[in-house]
Length: 164
Length: 108
Image (cartoon, rainbow over all chains, first blue to last red; front, top):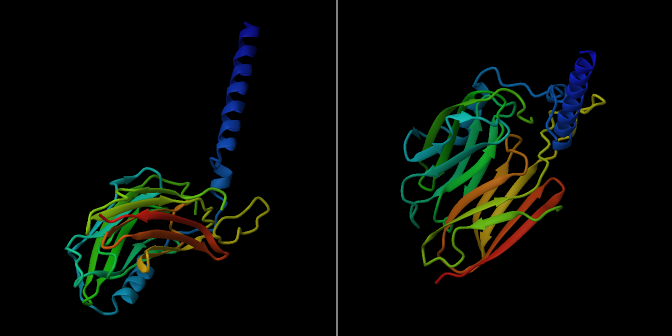
């Protein structure tokens, strides 16, 4: 019986050690590493609102013509797929000049900017973002005639380990 | 410049005006500037700051990533094949060009 208990502990130690070594080798952050960050989420959407206002420049914002595609659940907050595309036809006369993506509650809510030209002939982009917590995401697009299109989407993300 | 970017193109011989989709992923640490190392020091920010795609002389897309963009940045975009030429993609960070890729696009 004594030897059985001994074996059990020895096996636990071996298994635990191997699993830990595997995690470290794979670069998976342990609990201690995951906390080693000064990144804090925004307490409200004030900064996001300010960024949006700077982009729209007072123009009327149309909640149409722009699609923002996100998964319902961001199971990996370090890489959440985001697709933004203008749904109206892009022609040589009507095209999208600029697009931005804002992650409202991230430490730095401004996620990225896209610029297109008349030669692009399309306005459809996808990237992967890291999110510090569950939050609204929004996108704005400015067309060459000055119209500003907007779309927003709430996303729930799994907690922790976002890599910020 | 450790590894070349991985590129996927929906069609390298599109017909005139066809929408071509491009997916590209490159290797970059995307250090956010928020993290603290074991000695308690803040790890300096080191992120990809620019990506440009052009077809011949025509700029198709300029992308300006910030800290919210994931490690090993992935970018997907589309363009209309209005002329043949070299699709050229350049990735830059604060230290200059970190990756480049080219694909010939034949419009038929």
